[in-house]
Length: 317
Image (cartoon, rainbow, N blue to C red):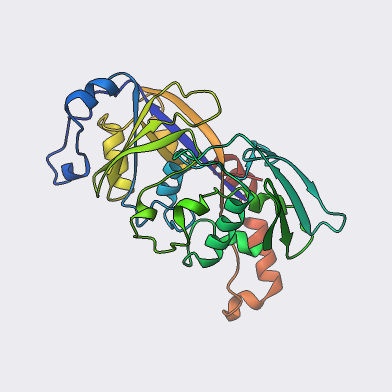
């Protein structure tokens, strides 16, 4: 079952970033001053994420970092609330008769933030990067579904799947990176992989190691311009720091599990938005234990679980 999560927005806490706590955690929050601060005033949103090992989305292993990198990199395919595939970098696709291939046609108007054009070569390179990514990277599970990716035209790619699964297209929601910019560099900590050049709505304006990133609306993005021009991303040490920062008005957005969102009702939150994540929770039996080798016992436990209550409060099918 997929998890439900909540996106919480605090009422106009922009401009409160100079406030801090005296509990030793203030180093997580470094202000930008001078002309940059004035330019951002009233046109900035503040988020948080963990210390990034890398800013290459295909080598990254941290979920909170992935949320930020999605602002800078567009996916091959997008998915609506029902899980149905939608155009993104690919504007059309066709599934082969055997269900084991998908031919995608890419948009011709997508530019990298360094001015280069996105082509099929970048998609193939991105898949090869996933193959070489460390275990635990966010998009490594793509390989559970996709066996290969080939270029058949400047803007055409063919994916070959291991099996004919109805969910194969879900594996094609990974972000695409530039082959020309990255040049085969798979070291997560290299300069190239710490300096994003994407195709998304935002590009990186500045990066203070272990402190913050500043993102700025990208001039090369072909879609509608975002209403918020700047995004400040505070580097935090953990979930508790995220919560403290949000509650004190130091960040504007907090992503919370459904079970935690209730505490913010009537707490001055200007918006609470529920969305379905791609994370799954699984409850299973450990068959290595003799106790659970008894089928009747397993059936009794399964019958006793309050399934409807769990789905209503925390999950969705």
